[in-house]
Every structure is written in structure tokens, then in C-alpha cells.
Image 1 (cartoon, rainbow, N blue to C red):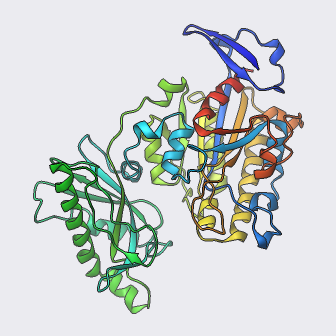
Image 2: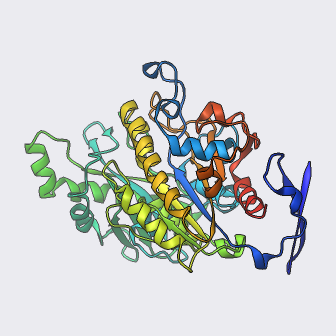
Image 3: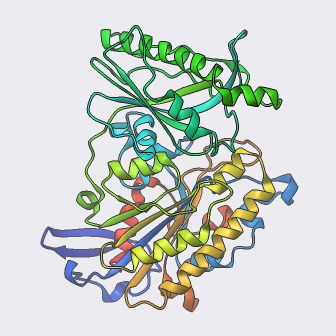
Length: 453
């Protein structure tokens, strides 16, 4: 193995260098003062997939026409990446923590706090929060018929959230409840008051046509017992408030399912982690349409850039995202940008092969615009493209297959410089790459070493 010696005011460090990195023979001492590269991390949520019979046993990535993604792959270093560990079908929150260099086993306390912070609810020590869905329950049987009352909920969600915000719990007069709309059928729910703990389960059965769960303590403490009782009362209170709301009366008249239930899942509290600046010595921004990723970025000290038209669904404005990335990354404030793209994951959950292929091609066109613009700038730009997990259209849910990973210099991509053996950005070609198969917590180390070559 070849090693790179990096010397700075913090000391000297040895970094492994995969064979094939251009120019490594000329690099022996790299002072921090001459580093001028900037990093763009493009995260395509749910990008990975499996062979699909409808696509002649190819994956959506193999089928989609993605010349810019393929150019990045052929000019850079590639591999297959397990977000947290091989064999784990993880959520986006734990995956993102790992990809940014945090150990989710040590610092993860549930996704609820991320979702609520991203939706605009402030969190204080002692608060608990939930990532929540508007759902439809048959109250007589207790069966959750549909975990998503309606994916196209933008017009109704804010109104229903406003009706639930501040709801009172007669048995818990010293606790307050805040509800804020997030995206699609989702909302953030925060509970504040004495003696709360996140050592409890949620009420979400996680699949349609299963009974609504009762919240249970996960440890034998008075705090966990009290908190679980409070959440069960809150769940009932939400149902009674939603059942009487005029919106649901109108939905029933229109032969639509009422949004009469809030599924409470991923109970979480504030976590204290080093910022991206402290961990990686990078000034960072995040563009993320989903509240849970925005909240995670806020927790990591990243500057959240809100982009008009970035909806986190099938109607998102890719050009607006590209323009925002270019404005932020080419300016003087940042040297690390993180762009999260959601629509591909939705297509996987919806089992829609055509949409997944279509959105991969739209993302490729957006990346082509970004690459072409960055190639004309004085600074050197490096781009990472990968996913947080696979969401195969055949399964409709997250799975444990690794996702393709690519890192490349923008200039190399435009000039057609040959990288490793991967010729395209997809699951099979990534397996030929110089990086092999690795876990997500190695990404930032790989990126920083690559920027120093």
C-alpha cells in the first residue's frame, strides 16, 4: 500500500492511497495553507436497486441514460458502499450520520428530533420529539389501513398541524405539545415538560393493515413508564381532534380516507456531537428538502440553505437546487456542500420503475449543469455521488444492498481523464472500482485524502 504523508500545524499523518490516483508521486508534503479544493457531496436518496424483470434484469441505474454520472465514474475512483455496515437496511438518518463521519451507535437517539428541528420546532434538553405520519385508522378494529393518508398533502397538512398544535393532555397538565408540518404526509411532534425520556417505543406498526401500537417503555424506569402513558394519551387526543376536523368530513364526503391518525415513531432527543467544522475542518452548507435531513444538518452545525421549489417530492425544482449549490459553493463562505435529493427514493417506495429511471436522468442533467459551471471556475472542485441506501422498486422499502460510490475531480470529468476500471455509475460497474467495498464512515476520510492528492 502507498502512503501519503500530510504535514500541518496539527502534526503529521499517514493516509493510504489507492493505486491509480493521478499525481501521487509528486506529493510528499502538503501544507494546509495550499489546499484550495472544494467538495460537493451529492446524495441520491434510495439510489441503489436490484435486477428488475421489467428492465430485462437490469437495475434502474443501468437502464437510465446518465452520461454525466458515467463521466464522473469513469474519471474518478469508485466502489460499493454500505452506509453503516454490510447487511443492514438502515434509515436515512443513521446513514447520513455515518456518511458524515459520526458513529450512529454512539450518538443516535432517534429520528424524531431531526424531523422536528427541520420542520422548525426548537429542541431543548429534556424535550422529546417524533417523526410522524398522517395516517388512516379504522377505529373500530384498531387497524391502520394506510400509513400515508395521502402523499399529496401539502395543501392540507399545514392546516391540520395548526389544529393539533398546542393540544392539551388532561392527565399531564405540566406538559406541552407542539406540531409542525414537514413535507408530504409528515409532521414533527415535540413534547416538552418534566421527567420525559426517549426510552420508549412508538405507535407506528410500520406496515399497512396492522394494529396501531401502544407506546411501551424500553427500560424499567419511572420516567419511561410516565412518558409512554403520556404518548398513548397524546395518540388518542390526536385521533379525537382529527376525527372532528372539517377537512376530514370533506374527505369522507369525497370518498377519500380521512387523515384521522398521527403515527408517532422514532422518538428522539437532542444529541451533542462535534460540528462538521470541528470534525473535518470544513465550512459546510446543506441543501435538503426533507426535514429530517435538514434537522440532522442543523445538529451537525451545517448552514441550511432553503431553496424555493425544492419540495422533496416528484415536483421538486432541480434547476433551483443547482443554482443554489453553485451560488454557495463558488462563494467565499463554504468549502463543503451537501446536496440531498429525495425523489428517487419516493419512486422506489412507490414501486414505480419508470419514475425511478426518469428521475435518475433528471438528476444527471442537473449534475451536468453543475459540472459544466464549476469547470469554468478558478477553484478546484471534487464531487462525490452516492446514496444513503438502496430502495428497490421490487421491494418498495429500504434494503441492505450496497450503493455505488464515486469521487472525481470536475476537471478530470470534463477532460475525460481515465480513473479506475469503472466505466459507468451503476451497481455492477462500481464493483470494479479501486475502492472496493467499504462502510460509509470511511467516506470523509477518503474525500479528504483525495483532495490532498
